[in-house]
Image (cartoon, rainbow, N blue to C red; front, side, top):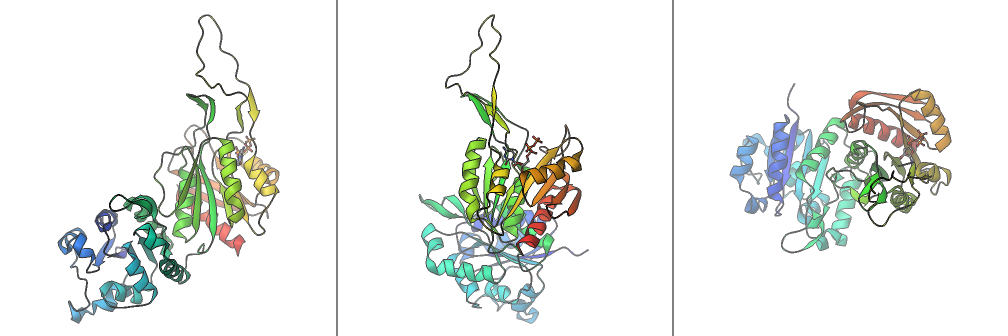
Length: 400
Ligand code: CTP
């Protein structure tokens, strides 16, 4: 089979050096990558670097190798075009259909999915001109990844950083795997919870669970690659922030409830993938609980935590909203799942069989997605991304 053909557009920003890492990841995972920098990008990283890393000649203009008609060929033959970093100027030229260099010509001739990973100063990102250009590109079907928040060039910090190249690579991989040019969650806002809550006993101890957050992060990553605006409410997951996703860190079930209730009213879908503790210690010791010679420890009394999924499913704040729960079961998996779906009142319930060496902390899982309308969608054993894609297929169907 031919290698998938990727065009890596690079525009002139300091983050151009991070595109070398993206290029490396793409080539090492079996993609044929043609780099098309802008003339300004070459001020930051030279043509020799792009050429050596990609194994292809590199040009910024349409006037080189004219007999090969590169200004149309490169775009026509691409399976994916990714522009990283995309500067405010490149976004503007792409939105207005200008064709004054090889990259903009390529963008006009490409009929494959297009991903932009913008990077610029916060003021430029927030400028109404850039906002309009991003909206135009998204409306036309491009995936424009939200920049990350953090250190910018010089001493500035704010929104505008290029996301981690490994995470941009994940977006490219997902977009290529789907191969469709119209992201079906574009214009949608989704909320995903991930990880496991921790319920403190004292300043150094907590009751926790074995959830790694991998399933929730896969849901957030795949939703972003399908064009959604994603809020990821993450409890104690030691995982990198997915590209373009707004991450809200929480600790306890109470914190998670507050964050979900704040985000849910504006969301088209809420997916509760987090393992929320059902109980918390009734009392919190403000000082460390010390052992005392010759004395047994005090028993720990537990109280119930609020059930967030049942609460948001019961008091629907937004009509047409799709709510998805997860069920971790060890026995009578499907029967327990059906009963739980009814009890919680959500629209979909992803039922996982869990155990010592099943699901928790692993990259793979298998599941059955139960619908309140009686449907049953099995997801065979495979990467957690497969479960995530199936969940979004079913959510997209229900959102119409
Ligand atoms: N959940 C929640 N709030 C809680 C507990 C769980 O929102 N306090 C959500 C989880 O995020 C998950 C779903 O409910 O989406 C199922 O959680 P699970 O622990 O499997 O079910 P329980 O209701 O706790 O039932 P049981 O402990 O009897 O299995």
